[in-house]
Length: 105
Image (tube, rainbow, N blue to C red; front, side):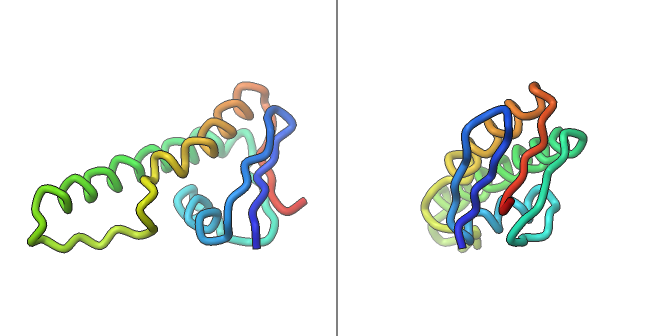
C-alpha cells in the first residue's frame, strides 16, 4: 500500500506503507487505509514528530559514538528528520491555511 497524504493547502506527500505507518504511529493515529488529521490535531502531530526526531537523532549519535553499544533504531538508514520533513511541511502549511490532512480518500 502507498500512502498519499493530501491537503487542500499543499501538494501530496507520498510514502510507502512502512514509512506512512511510522508517521501515523508517531502522531498517534492508527495506521489505516484512510483517515484524517484535523486542523485541531495538527499542532500535536507536529510536536510528536519533532520529539521523535530528537529521540531518533540522539539514538543515532549514541550508536555512532560507541560502536560497542548496540542501540536499536527503527527504520532504515534514512534519518527520520529527512523522511518526516515533507510530512511536517504539509502539516504546517495545512495548519496555516486551516485545512485538514487526509489520506486514502
